[in-house]
Image (cartoon, rainbow, N blue to C red; front, side, top):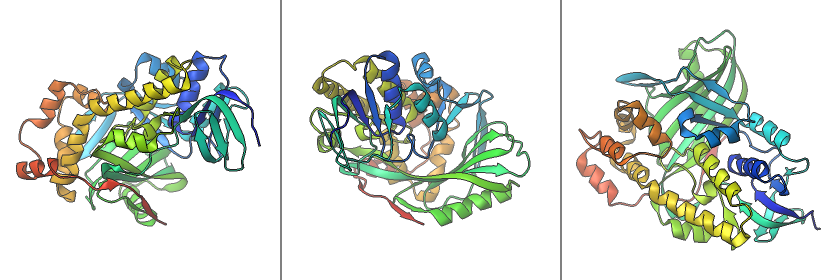
Amino acid sequence: MTGHACDMVIAGGGLAGGLIALAVAKRHPDMTLRLVEAGPTPGGNHRWSVFSSDLTGEGHDLLSPVAQTVWDAGNEVAFPGHARRLAAPYRSIASADFAAALHRELPQGAIQCNAPIAALDAGGVTLADGTRIDAGKVIDARGALPSAHLNGGWQVFMGRHIATDVPHGLTRPIIMDASVEQLGGYRFVYVLPLAPDELFVEDTYYQDTPDLDEGELSARIDAHCAARGWTGREIGRETGVLPVITGGDPAAYLAEARVEGVALAGARGLFVHPLTSYTLPFAVQTALAIARHAHLPASQLAQKLEARSLGHWQATGFYRLLGTMLFGAAEPAERVRIFERFYRLPEPLIERFYAGQSTLADMARVLVGKPPVPVGRALSALTSDRPPLLFSNRKA
């Protein structure tokens, strides 16, 4: 079967793919687009958050059609020996609101859901049902690939959206509550007050394996809420197993992931924060870059994105070094000390860290002083390879 031809087809309707579609449609309204998503709706079932300072004016403009919850009064962190309020405004996007914006802003017929892709090439994509969508350019934004060419650890989480029985009284996000018991790795609870009677509570772990036990994490969220007097009913949940990249061979990974003439974007193109697994600022930057070069021939666009990916890898080496020390030098229950020390540093440094824009002075400030891990173990970790990022497990 043959589908309609278009100027650009974007494989994967998650955050990266959806933002590319928005950016290209806005800058080039003459171009015909197709956003192809395997699931029932673009955006999937996720929540993405960002410090306001992580985005440029152009980035905020790109996100402006998407409904966002914004906390201008800042955010909070808590550790066993330290708690702090940070002034940076914080904002969060629900995937349902992202999907609504895509349906509203993109041309009718541009979004095709329930359409798993069987194959793609420089001239288009072939769906699992045999339908062929021919395209002048193809962008592959279908998510990270497991690879023996990358190594590191894992960030594992469960988030629950709760309607509370009574107003909960929180006015600011608690972006990292690490005063909780440390279990199997660095653990913290992330809490967003979405409305006076709604909370998003997420239990997150930096751990050595990708195992996720939904029953166990759900019980821990129940216990955390009960200890704080938050009662109510669950109205949504999400889970995730994300790679925390500490090293590897990016050129070999890209060669493995590459389809000649197809541009790689999102996590598939390594556009992530290697330590925090943060994606939103980098997805915005990549979408804007693709929109600026959307009229290039397909092969040139693919080459430009690959060069951009390798440049991003080089620019984020400091965060991979820190990740190596986090996983390799600190005992799982002691990893909290690294983050507690970090959150005593000046707030502008913390903001630049999350945006992937740390200066040389920032890097020196993070590394100098009394180390939170033994020096010998840190040096040993830097000369050892972490396990390859190959698989993920989940227990129902």
